[in-house]
Image (tube, rainbow, N blue to C red):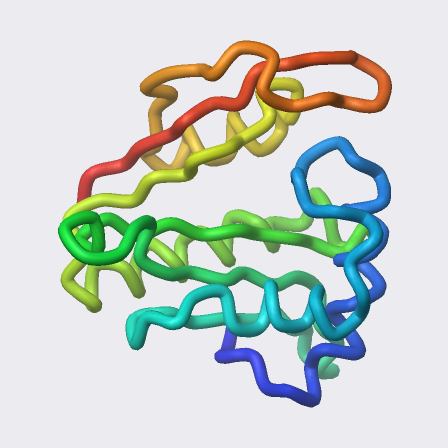
Length: 163
């Protein structure tokens, strides 16, 4: 696990595109240009407390990435948030767990009081179970807030974890 560098973007972009194009877990516009996607992922917030990381294997291959930032500005800046993406070939190998654990540790070091995920697609049961195993709980679900390509309109969970 390490902080992402500009040179990592070409390795992140293919799985970013694959995940966004699938339309199953992120409400990002699949028509984003490469530069818009890079800006969205690599600089997720103008806040000084923001960070993008990569998980790499022993050979330096990028397996996944996360970005983290204050969930809201001003009076809401004491709660962190994050997004995670793992390359298809690396799924099921603990990469998502490692990325999230690193984010939890970072948020604690940075003095955040809690972490909130605003939009976890309820049909993304692998992610929901993973986040729950790391201490997050579903505190509400916005009904039909996400249009899934095969399940139709499904809910978005708001998940929370105190620090």
